Length: 389
Ligand code: FAS
Ligand code: PHB
Image 1 (cartoon, protein in one colour):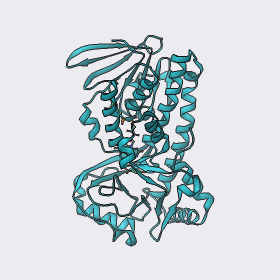
Image 2 (cartoon, rainbow, N blue to C red):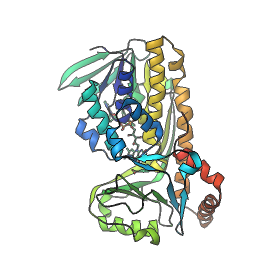
Image 3 (cartoon, rainbow, N blue to C red):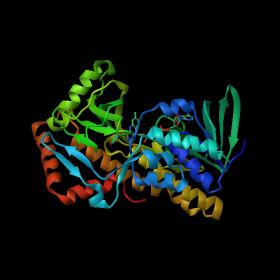
């Protein structure tokens, strides 16, 4: 097989890139390790910047988003005594949309079938070849049969554990990482949310987040120790701890119900440089990871893909090599600012092992300052809605 761009990974980054290239008349084939059902089964992000929703509107892959997406003009920080509302609409003129990553992925998959975007699922042993030349190719096995796709470029959208980042030569690569000493236990339940907007809570016991997927489906998280076992958290214990950490005013509005999904995810900050070498580009989680506190992970995948689409379109349709040469620096500039915001909000809202009473007072003073300062709230707001491309 031959195409112009091989995309490894059919998660949100790969699917979005495939559609955007197709819309520009650029031929792409996606090669995905898992089944479509497995990809859809992963419960992840919930808050979309306009960075991502604008692309879905541009593609016309927005019918369900328009019908079911919940525009949010603000969110809340809870410090144990009050809710500090960050009015992102008033402070930035923009909003975010609550619409699950699973639904974004589902919409992109449905549109792929309708529009003829080629996706090869359950591809085994995907391997990259020739990335330092201008005739790279990917090999893999489909139903046990060896296959090969030749292309002009390969884009690694294969997430944190995929092969693309590993294919970058060590002498050009530099990784930056911070692993946090705790994780997030998340539950999904078909109960109405406890609040009409998200609440990020800082409590002596640890962090909690009250989010949602719709007006009838809630998504909650609590900070747990890194070595915590999910078995130690039956539903009732999760609901009890959420009531404590979200505070008495909110606790009364929590509707309990059986968790339809419950999992623990580690938190890390990670950036890999460069995001391009030869004929290989990286986009999304294959190049960077943020702690989900700032709701940036999925949205950074969208900005990477927006930059890369512009670059590949200039190359194929205008014979302009400059944009592909600038891709890595341009994408990383936005990645690092999102890494900073995510790290800062994580540091503010979580309990770190070894936190001293002074450290805790510093967190409380920071929250008290945010409550009293429009300037501080504006800084948070403009990062939360997404910095400009
Ligand atoms: P993905 O990991 O989504 O997709 C990569 C794809 O590549 C997968 O389908 C995988 O099967 C495939 N792949 C891997 N290896 C392959 C191989 N060898 N060959 C072919 N295909 C291969 N972000 C937020 O904004 N908010 C959140 O609350 C949030 N929660 C998260 C919770 C968890 C547990 C995780 C892991 C991430 C979370 N994220 C969150 C971040 C997440 O949403 C990512 O940013 C988003 O999935 C990025 O999309 P992709 O870059 O497409 O990577
Ligand atoms: C979610 O709803 O899954 C979610 C929302 C906001 C975050 C993280 C996760 O910052």
